[in-house]
Image 1 (cartoon, rainbow, N blue to C red):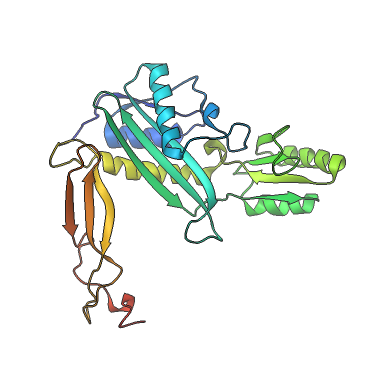
Image 2: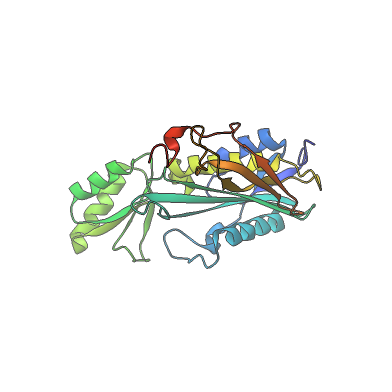
Length: 281
């Protein structure tokens, strides 16, 4: 089955120019006509700088964005992303970008999402008390290709200066802070249009979602039949001991919950002994 969404209008629920990476992928991968929900204010659901707290989890927030975009445009097909930043859950000393991308199809009562966790992020922030400290931070986080935010202190919500991509503007604003209070706080602007690293992660998440949307359930024939879990245990090719490599993938339909197990998902029936805890402890 192909072309489930072909020819339909799909609206992107974004005010941060995510269509730059989403539109070409969606049009090529789903054969849809992409539009942007002009006038949609997604900042009402939360801002990275804290003026508006995000009170719901990322998936619920993305769902609300889709619903607002469909109500605003009259479309019955929408897509939205929601990103979070912090320490990697397994490698705590590394910052990570978690992106959720959700498609809602009101016509067929479908919700299908993809999640992607990446360490390819410049997410950071620090206090500075000199221009030298500020400039060292800016260089580390790839300014000016990536935007910066200045504020009086880490938790200050008043007078926040966002979207700085001009070195002269950064220097002038920093000098004002230093003259007034002797210090300031600088952080990366994680809005997509000011952060090419995040935009790349959104693009990778879209590729995962499109792959999922083009995978059809053998039971109900609807899109969204995808891997939800990996079962370890692929045997070592030398001693036969079960390894941590995937022996099987579990595919589940997001609509009817039909399940199938696929053995040897990576096309190999044994694991290289160098990854075996017995042969190479």
